Image 1 (spheres, rainbow, N blue to C red):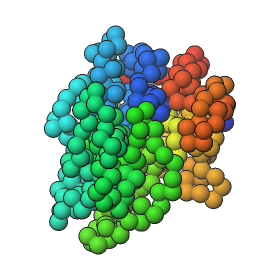
Image 2 (image 1 turned 45 degrees about the vertical axis):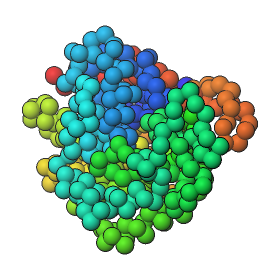
Image 3 (image 1 turned 30 degrees about the horizontal axis):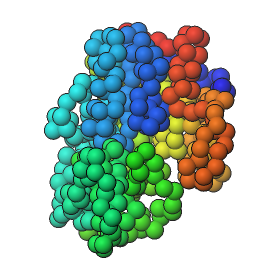
Amino acid sequence: MHEILDWAKLRHFSHIIWDIDGTITENDKLSGEATIKIINLALQGVYHSFITGRDGQWIVDNVIKPMAKFFHFGLVHDKLAFFAEVGCVLVPSYPVAASEMPLHPAVGEHPLCTNKDGIRDKLRELAYDPATLMKPKKGHRAPSNRDIVYDANGVAYLVDRSKPSPKCYQYIWSPYKIAFGTLEKIRDEKGKTKTFDQQPFDEIITTEIKKAGLADSVRTEIVSTAVNIVPVVNRVSLGKSWAAGIAIENIVDKLHGSFALDEVLRRTVAIGDGLADLDFTQPTFSGKGAKKSPRHNIPMIFVGQQSDLPRKGQHREKLVKNIIIQATGLGELQFKYTDDVIQLTPATGPRVASVILDFLKNWDYFDSFE
């Protein structure tokens, strides 16, 4: 089920940085087994920071509302922190509207947030724009000249095949993001996306960014289901390394200075299932922690597949050394959607994360800051 890659790096952990999508959720459904263990650990004083590139409303609908149904959730609000758009948006640990989710101060005046010179408008024109699409009527079939497509939040839209397609015709603009810009892969009714080379579309987006004169303050990032358009602040791209730094600074603030940044870092572990999650292991600090930032790597528990890790010579290859536990389950036969084949797929994500939480708890590797 799991392999301890580095016993020497196992230590007492008081703070867990979680990836969300695919780590505590499967197909946008929160794992009850993992959730109850998270809440029980929080009751014992362990802090949790949940970080995703998804928007704040997605976190509210798919994580916070389901989590709030669990016994004792109301007692652990101060132990849970939720970060949308990779740390750019702080989502309170109780259901709120998007207008009540504060932006991180570092991005409040960024061109992507202020729509300087209409940059967001120009980027959204590259893909299908939900603002210009009709929604299908419930119980009615789509007209013969229209296709039904879905966004990452499961909302359906009608695409008129008789009209010219946008340059990035495989994507739909995310209307939910307020700091990032995201072109999401179009999904089907089951939430599945197609597999294709995203690089040509990334080049189209990059060209638009350069034309707007924002090459130094905006970059693109290709992920498995989207192309993210990411703010750059003080020469730091606001990805999961930056988000990990934000999460750690947040814990230092919650502890009111009783533990220094160095000690919080030392007692933090990350859990993720994807390539980008490896960035959690090298937090960067652009705010008050930047000058006093110690050079600590955060150990990681990886609950994805071997194929999700970087190959030799690839970006992030050096971060693999920060994985202390690599875990997959025995798996089950599954239909591989993209290739029309049935194959044995290793168990990953929430089921495996739940087992690892048990292992660490049984071996007394969790501890409270108090």
